[in-house]
Each structure stands twice: as structure tokens, then as C-alpha cells.
Image (tube, rainbow, N blue to C red; front, side):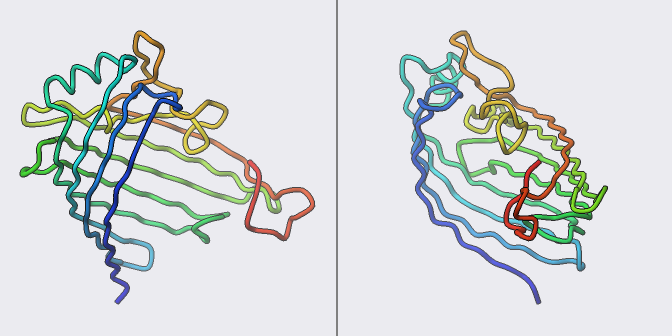
Length: 214
């Protein structure tokens, strides 16, 4: 019937000292389950539920906003995370599409039962159209918004960032957005990104569909 079910069991160690973002270290462990349900040939919904524990370590170079958050809520937190999303995808390929469009909307939230109370809403739209031979016009738009609730602040590690190959090319990873007094990028609770690209084959390997330039 096309329904998918996946299980997650993970441990993630993060040290941002070599990144553009503010300094902190974290260890996250968790588990979860998620489902994908096709509604029509082009439409699908997905939802999931998971549990995650985060341990945070700051240092002398950590931004004041991070220090304030840890002072208020502590270095260890537990999250019961719920998620829900919808997608309509008419593209002719998932990895290297040349025509069609994609509309996605999703939300995740820290649910009651955990220490962290937050929500994040994100939307993504992509439109592709051949303009001449193998050259394809691609337009992308993304919008995200997040905040805390029930008297809780949005955890800094749930902030949005922009810049880099996955959002705005030509800028270093996560280098667009607010900075702290030390010049570190600390992200924010909202993000809006729009891109317009021309996609074309790699010269000399026009028949190879595994790579293309933009």
C-alpha cells in the first residue's frame, strides 16, 4: 500500500569550534519512529514521534545568549519530539529533476513530557522548467519560523542558519544572519531564502546525469 515506517536510534556528538557558529559542544542520544503515507500519486504526508536527550558543554568563547540559556534551563535536557509534514511532488526525478514542482510544509515541536517546549515550522517550494535544450531554470523558496512556548525560550541549538551550498551559494556555511559581540554567527528564530539558478550539464559529459553545474 506504499506506507513506509522507519526507526531511529542514534548518538550525535557535535563540536562547533571549527564552524562559523558560536562555540559549544553537545552530545545527543535518542530514538524514534516515523511514518510516510502516500495520499495520491503526487501527495504524501509524514509524521513521527521521538525522544532525545541533550548534554551541552560551553566554553569561554561561547556567546552570551548560549550562556544565558544554560543558566536558565541547565546543561541537560530531555525532548519529546513530534513532527508532521505534507508534500506534493510532480518533479520528473528526485535527485536531478528537470521539470515539475515541489511543495513541502512541515512542523516539529517539543511536546509536553519533555523539558524543552518549542515549535519549528518550515516550508519549501521548488519549480523547474527547461528553457533551452538541456538547460533548466530552477527557482527555490524557503521559509522557516520557530519559537518557544509555555514560558520556555527557543533552544539556541534549534536556531535557523543560512549560507553555504545547501541554502545560499557563494557564502560560507551558516555565515548569513545575526552575530554576537565576538563575531560568531548565532542564528535566529526565522529564515527566508530565495534562489534562482540555471542548471546545465557538465561540459564533455552531457550523457552523465549524476552531476551537473549551476
